[in-house]
Length: 260
Image (cartoon, rainbow, N blue to C red; front, side, top):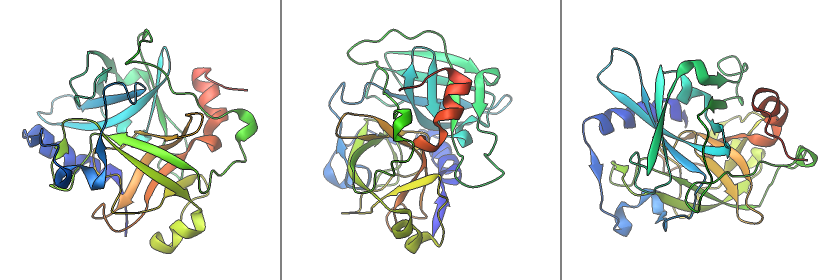
């Protein structure tokens, strides 16, 4: 069963709001057989703490720095009123510094909510200086629009749900392989052409709270996916992403970020 991380995302948010966090990095508790990241492994990733006006709870997610003024994430992470963006630390939603951004700076793809495969969004941010622990991740070049990246090895990092049911306090990473949409559809029935999946291997999977995080190639690190869905229990099917190559024109139109 495929479950949108929009739902898992909210379930994890409730756990986080109640203080259900952990600093236990033992192998049994690392997110679906991932591993703790060393400081600076993924300087492009940011933790998102999302707020709804008038509510006492918050939601959590992730995103990626794609330029000095833009963060790429999932559209379903941008249905709240504001966000704290935490930069430059593996310590979850407690970065070296943060920016508070209101919804006027959220841009969701117009296809989100109307058709599958467009769960992608942008956040316009204050200017961010690049350092050894805060840096952008390049996007694919326009010449790679037709590349499906099948069989490519990638890394996915995040602070989402772990095997013990808690959210990670320290950044967890997984090395996963991209599969064809036909293989992914054997688990979920159908997969939009503008989505992509990574194979479930040794129990490795994204989970609630990982929403919006980047899928990055090992070779010539490039962001090719935005995490959006997983199996219902995060352990029995492929992880799913919005395909970045199919949204390069939209990203360029809204942010000016493009690679040729």
